[in-house]
Image 1 (cartoon, rainbow, N blue to C red):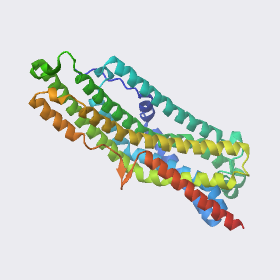
Image 2 (cartoon, rainbow, N blue to C red):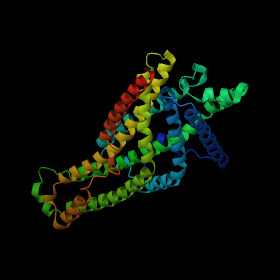
Image 3 (cartoon, rainbow, N blue to C red):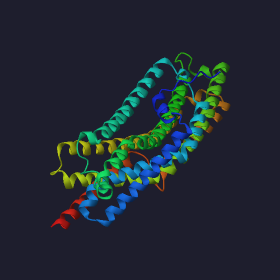
Image 4 (tube, rainbow, N blue to C red):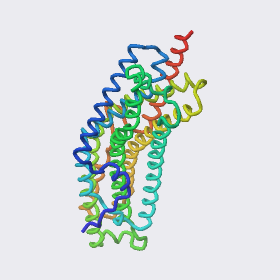
Length: 382
């Protein structure tokens, strides 16, 4: 009987699956519709009064809002698929008790460090949302909606203004659930691959005093065969889980890539063009905003890299197995397992792989285009 599974990333799981009443879901859709209308109004105003300076000044927040709206809509679109993937994971997940105590301790420490890092990013996001509230100073330099509301609503501008910023955390929460669900499912899949690897390492331990006597040890050969079959079954199940995650990721990856790069470009361009005129509170807001984007991008690229490295480590563990001490049947099972592990799992869309190199490429492209916008604004002023 399989030991009861204990989830080391339960905090992320709780964030994704806070049960919503139908009325709450209706309110979420209503808020998305209102924000979409407000965004269209801002785009109309920007086109009507277009200038390079205006575009550079307000594009970071406009892109941020379209990113949030897009992620919130995507989450509602793939929510059922995410639930199916996590339900399937609950059915196949191994407990940490499948591996030795020392390996458990090492793995728990790794999970704790990951949880601390993710918590830090979430705390940074919460702090950024808080410091951008109207109570901490004027937001006119960042949000074009303020002057739009004043122009269109006059004395009643405070109503849409406070509503706009008051309900933003609710729509932002739905967008956060999109990338948190991706991180959570990948981390759980990574954990299971590591468990399979550690289980294999434990199963392949050979006592030096026995040596080649294992060839004629029937009990040993049966244990090895049983362990290999168990690991193959789990590996097949994990490959199916990764495929489910990849299908979900492919729905969000195009817009996340495009909007993510545009967000970085616009943020760097804003800093380059207005660094000498920004107030202290604006500098703090902008730096925290950019830090959030960079941290989220880093987390997503790191998560994608873990898929590649974890599946590669499993192959390396198999290569180091003492197959020469096994009987013919076990060697055949082993070769079948080895062949199935030759291809590393990865998240690839149109040749673009979610890994460390993508993060470096995004930063390089963002800085290059930010410098182009800086020179373009400088030439338009002169």
